[in-house]
Amino acid sequence: MSTITFLWSGSQPAASAPVQPGDANGRLLDAYSEAVTKAVERMAPSVIAIDVKKAAGASGRRATRDGRGEQTGAGSGFIITPDGFALTNSHVVHGATELKVMLTDGRRLAAQLIGDDPDTDLAVVRIDALDLVPAELGDSAALRPGQVAIAIGCPLGFQCTVTTGVISALGRSLRAQNGRLMDAIIQTDAALNPGNSGGPLVNSRGEVVGVNTAVILPAQGLAFAVPVNTARDVAAQLINNGRIRRSVVGFGGQTAPIVRQIVRHYRLPQDTGVLVIAVEPGSPAQAAGLLEGDVIVRAGAHPAASIEAIQRVLTQSTIGAPLPLTVLRGTELVTLTAVPAERVA
Image 1 (tube, helix red, strand yellow):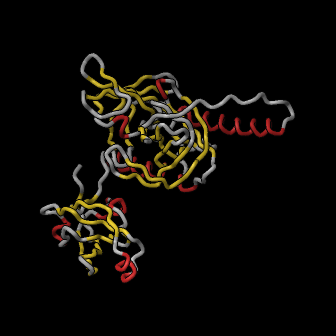
Image 2: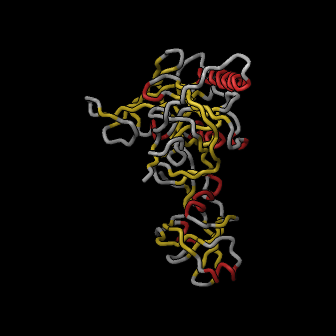
Image 3: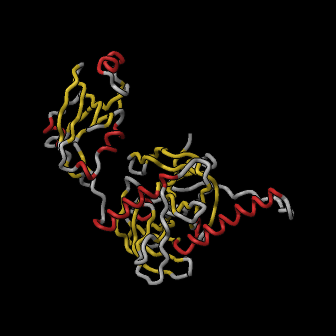
C-alpha cells in the first residue's frame, strides 16, 4: 500500500561519468549543469530553513518532543517580498508557538506566522530583517511535462540542498492533511527528503514554479508541488486578511452513480453526481430546499460529478451570491438556488 507523506522521500542522484574534452554528450552535460547552476545561484539567497515549536499534541510531520513538553520540527520556505514575507507549507507551521528561520547568509531570526491555509497546504510567515532577496515567481500555467525541475530546500537540516529532475505530470489531485482535495498539483521526480516541505520548485531560469509539499512512499520519484499560481493568490489573501475566505452550502454528500437511462434522458455530461446524505439545520442548503436523497448534478455552470467538483465551485467569490443547484429528485430534474455563506474554520 502506498502512503502519501507530507513530505518525505527521495534518493541521491547517481554520479555521472567523467566528461571527456570534445565529447558531444559532455558538452550537453556542461550546458545542463550551467543552466542548473545559474538557476540555483539566482534562487538560493531567497531560500530559508524553518525551525518550528508546537504545543504538545499539535499535528506536524517530523516532530519530536523536547524536554519541555513541546514538539519540534523543521521545514523550508522562500522569501517572496523585500519586506520579509515568505511562503512555506501549512503542515510545517500550523499550530506553531515559535518560529525561527535561518537565511543562506547565516543569519538566524525570529519569524511570525501571518496565516496558513490547510486546504492548499500553504502558509505565509514574516521575517523582520533587512537586505532580503525575494524570489522571482514564474508561471506554473506555462509548465510542460519533461521540463527541468529543480528542488531547493533544507532536508534534515542540510542548508540549501539542491536536487534535480523533470516535471513528470501536471493537473494531479492530492489530498491535503485535512482531507480536502488539492487540484492542479505538479508531479515531479526531483528527490525530496524530510525538511524539504515548503521549499521552492524552480525552473531552469531560476523562477519558482511550485511549492514542494509531499511524496508518495515507498515509491521512488513521486513528489508533488503546489503550483506557484495558486501560491501567489493564496499568499496575497493571507497577507491581506490572515486567512482564506471560502463559502459553504451546508450539506454532507458523497459521489454516487446515476442510472444510465437518466443520464441519456437528460443528456448529462457525467454519469455520477453528489448524493445528499445530510442537510445542516439553518444552512443555505436547507433554505434552498435541498433534501436528503437528492443527487446534485450541477453547481452553477459546472457539472457536479463529485463532492470535490462542488468544493472547487465554493470559493470566496460565491459568498452571498446566488448559486443554482441542479438536482435529481427521484427521476425529476429540479433547479434550486442556494446562497452560500462564509465557511467558519
